[in-house]
Image (cartoon, rainbow over the protein chains, first blue to last red):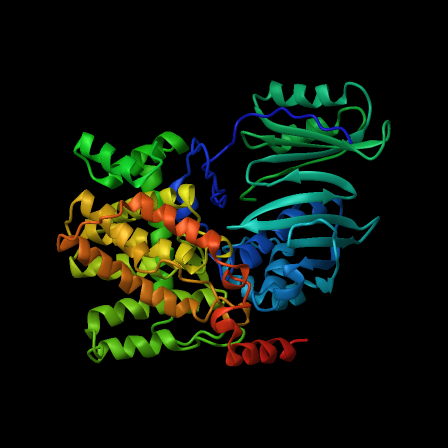
Amino acid sequence: MLYLYFCRFFCYGTENYKAIQYKEGMNLDISIFEVVGPVMIGPSSSHTAGAARLARVARRMAENAGAVTHVSFGLHGSFARTYKGHGTDRALVAGALGLREDDERLSDAFSLAAAEGLTYDFHEIVLEGSHENTVEIIFTLSEGDPFTVTGSSLGGGRIAIKRIKGFDVDFTAHVPTLVIVQQDEKGVVSEITGVLAAHGINIGIMRVSRLAKGETACCVIEADANISDAVVDQIRRLNHILSAQAVHPEA
Amino acid sequence: MYNSIQDLVSQAEERGAGLWKIVLENEIKLSELDETSIYKKLDERYDVMIRSAERALGQSLPAIGGLIEGIASRHARFAQQGGGLMGGFLNQLMARAFSCSEVNASMGKICAVPTAGACGVLPAVLLTVGEKYTLGRREILEALLTASGVGAVITKNATVSGAEGGCQAECGAAAAMAAAAAVQMAGGTIHMSADACGFALMNCMGLICDPVAGLVQLPCALRNASQAVNALVSADMALAGLTSVIPPDEVIEAMFHTGRMLPPALKETALGGIAAAEAGKRIQAEIFSENP
């Protein structure tokens, strides 16, 4: 797997991005809104708010691929053991319906899903080496292959998306993020960055992973500014691009 | 930037400003938001806090397990009728903390300040002390700024995670934040605010996290109420002139090391404390066998 890193120092001060501990050095600052917040539906920032957020981000990506008819949640670790007590199940369904983690309808997620005709199921799985709070979300689409997203809830409502359709990725979706699947060809990445540069969008972090050399690759770009539909469309029209979508933290 | 309570105090002294002002100015630099936008965000969050502190006062909110259902409304009635030994003021404070915990447990909307499990302490203290001194919204938000500065220091130098530090790191940290805010609202000095923060953590040093059945209900709600009272106890100690022999920053460090020393069974795993009591284990078995 090839990783390209264009790293900048930490982007901080964003909503719902709670306190990472830095015991040594102490040269990183913490926004007061990481201490006073997030505003969320209880009872647990990791088991409820983070779960809703994970499912919502996954849904945003899946619905780009087609109409969702069923969602299957594979629960790993602490999610599998404790999900009923923390409403993780309702939070996940709420997220899969597109509800935000501070939406008061979250606890009615099951009846909302019934009203929308979305079916769902839960099962326990073991994902070796994964974070304790990890879920594999499989969206059945009205046409084509299922869309699978795996992610972890890290605490304080923060999440990490770890796998999309078989590609290993790692992003938090707390900043505007572009997820692109492309043919692994020379020059594709530079064309993508060219489009972003032309629109004045600065890249915070960029990673490319591929299944095998010359096959398909997945490129995840975390940007400093919102990525408009026009930009996404322009990237989709580039040669060798199979799919492209933007995920915004508040969308 | 501030990395310690001492930083906050010395910068405030140099500038002849309140602690809140240092916290606010740092946030402006850090977030690149202007003062108005920061106050707007704080105001929105304080609205959520108020609603969660009031919502369960007049109604019981059902939750899985139902271990704390109705405690806020019963306590609010108790406070209204004079409030037993400690009187209406402190019992109203506790009722509000209970309300936040009940709202949280029932999948209602709360502000995690600093965490969801400890979401009752700050709203109860800000609201109740604000009323006592008939403070305006701006003054309460200034107190919230001071509290959040204390919370940021604890987050940096220790932890606010129950899984990492036990309840002292969640409700204890909330009490330390609220104590500093309460001193400010009562007209105390910046040194008193700093000392109150240290007292609050000393008063709950080593407090474990032992949720029955792993639910954020019991003893979480009780700890929210008792740590809200702790915040006011600590604030009064400072306001009366008691000064901290151990500097607040060293108390924060001690809390962190104490948390590290606590075994995993006493840190949110529901394997120790009252969670491991016979009744605690029975409740866990009942709740999770009902929903196989």
